[in-house]
Image 1 (cartoon, rainbow, N blue to C red):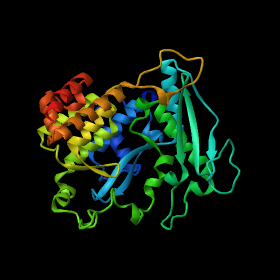
Image 2 (image 1 turned 135 degrees about the vertical axis):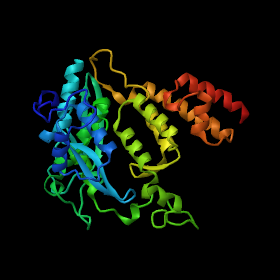
Image 3 (image 1 turned 135 degrees about the horizontal axis):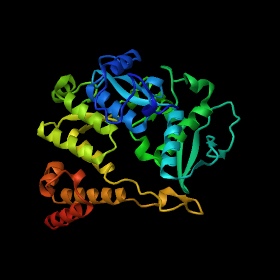
Image 4 (image 1 turned 120 degrees about the vertical axis):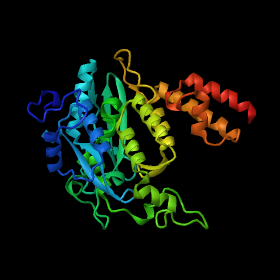
Amino acid sequence: MTEISKVGGSLAILPDQTNWTSDQQAVLMQSGIDNQVAPAELSAFLHLCQRTRLDPFSRQIYLIGRWNGQQQRKVYTPQTSIDGYRVIAHRAAAEAGHSLGYEDTLWCDPSGKWRDVWLDQQPPAAAKVTVIRNGMRFSAVARYSEYVQTKKGGEPSGLWVKMPTTMTAKCAEALALRMAFPHDLAGVYTAEEMAQADNPPAAENRHLRKVQPGEGDPWASAPDAMLNAVKGRSQPAQDVADVAVQTSSQGAVGDLYRQARDAGLLTETVKVDRELLELGAFLIQRGNELASPAPEPASAASDVVDAEVVTTPEDDYAAAVADLRDAADAAHLEDFENGAEQALGMPIADASVEAIRALAATIRPAA
């Protein structure tokens, strides 16, 4: 595939470009993006094209809109193909001087037995792909039932009818590649993975949790605060959340947090992966996820090592935040995010592990 840095003409995306040009935006609109797209979605898409070096004008990467009932508009999500994922992975490995390979793809039948070839007429229950980057194994399993694209009646549709084995394996490969190359592939998903996003929603899956006795259905009869958020008050907050989902920089998330705080948006409700969260809580969570880069192996190992056994600085950071939250809960302290920010003098996402643990130790004796 052609890298965007090598594409000439008025559609060339420059590494230091901060906005789409009029020519670029005109072509994007002709490709199926309509005026419902949010400015934040377009900005995030530009950043993603620059980071992945995939060219949207050569149809290497797309911005796909799907109707979102919560926001009452199309929400646009970047997508590429599994071929785009492979291009990014091979390029990143080559630039890092790493080896890249695969183990044989495996398919699982309903009884749990794995096979290296699938000959049954019925779809497999799951597929497993293992990517080997510089001697480290990154294995991922994709279940057919979680990714299959269906019609309204529940039967498979599209390529999932003709090639369920291949489609399930592609989803597993995308998961494994994203584990092996988290910084290069963060924020973009393959078309095979996102096919299920177009499935008609099932009534039994509408709730994030069970409705308690005496409690109304939050989706059928939203309270006034939620309606106000949906009808416009929270749109800036949702834009911030959408950008945070796409960025792979902890510093950028910190900047978003400060901007949202100054604008009074931290308590606004946003929707991320079908879950309703306060913007402040989500930004802190996102910052924690990006707190430290995944460590690179010092050298190629003679034996293959399972990546799952490696402890990363991200694990220490998540454990420190969990410890602080437990200490605050034990002390019956309210407004965790704002209180911790005031005590630390910065957002939790910007604080060190040592500072977070020291604060937890200070709070705990009061419990």
